[in-house]
Length: 357
Image (cartoon, rainbow, N blue to C red):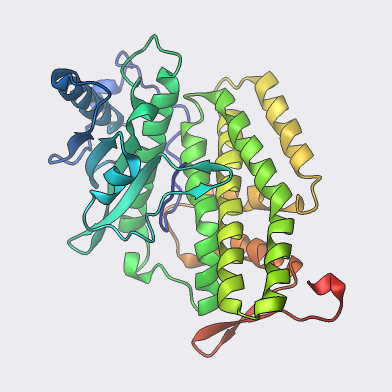
């Protein structure tokens, strides 16, 4: 899984022709940052020449992919056997904003980390070695999955470039208009960010969407009981500074899972030659998820994500309004009512009966 900051979506075409024999291939310029480097940190054997060759192959792929994605702000690529050590090796990144996803549904193994250079957001793509080890082995069963992972992270790089160059007032203006909006943006941003990356990378491994749908179903099944348990504990300790971070984390991950699943399904549907049988299976799974107690969120988040995806260049923070309203509706469903209070946020958690736990 991936984690990213406040990034917009841009439709570059969801099934690009990556063949070197494409008629217009030579006319597409490479956009890769000329000083971009590939750093392999740890290898699965002592063959240093093999590791260097692998790094060269990854660089070659990055150059090829940069004909279709704007990678002019890709500072470097880090591939590490110890994923967390590889993440920690990146200087200039905010550890809180670039922390990998780790919960009962999965653990992050690839990320496009944000770093600041000359007061502008750049990216460092970090990937776990076993996840992309087969990226140059065309005969391996996981070859396409490795390519899918790499492309997915590079879409985040491209989206960052769009954001940095088109957001009105620049990246410093990309904040909510009040504290409540800022808190909601933190929760819903993974939905639009991962929707974009998943939709644009679905063509590599179309059937991988089953994994995303299973994760979404599990997260949506559990979120009500997870927050209910946190509310019951809150009645004992009375500390909103303990309850609210739990709510934020669970809601944020749910929106992240929505982005993965909905983006992938819509990416398959947008293909020039979609697998209708696979798509029907995906849609049936989404219908099943929609029957869960909080399943209403699937249809509403899908409509909001599609709207965001089709909105470019970046017009302003107001384009998040639909997703923000969905998040607020979900939180209020848990009988939590956040509102602005001065320059901060107040969360009302009324207790009138056993139902309000």
